[in-house]
Image (cartoon, rainbow, N blue to C red; front, side):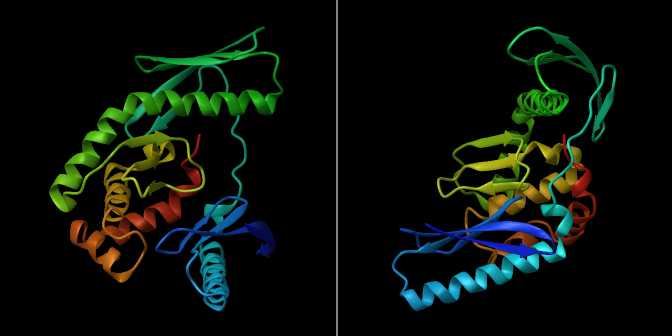
Length: 242
């Protein structure tokens, strides 16, 4: 693996370049890194050309959507705080105890959190953020899986292995080569039609692994007004976080 550092609009990214036994080129942008996977069989000159193309694409994405890749500030949480996810509202019940671990559970419209008092304030808020996300993932996963399966049966009819709902801050979702659909719990803050767009987006990757013209035609066929949902995520995505 080869690595290099680049600075884009004041943000530093580590570029990781890997050659793998794969058929296509894959580039992902994280909060602090750009990961480029290149087919091993390509000639050296072609690899260099594709890497430069992918770096240019990543730079364009970051410059056009700086808020998407900017590191989010850590939220502060307090007892009896209300949080909203779409039409659902929850009250946080937080207690701090002299113990090593932290835990959480949902009862009705309350989320009860038992947090270790042997942590810094930043660590406490990170624990709370992670635990809230996990609780809501467990509660919402069955419904999310059902909706993804319904959209798949209606528009794509491809095999889905598993559906995961977890707190991924670097993207809204992904589709693995094994047929697994991954969805970030951040999407729970979005309206249902926007969620459906993301599900359709990832399901389309079961047919087209890249963002080719053919891929976007699949998305548009399933959801003609998908660009409206894209714009919602671009405009409001920065507020969708735990």
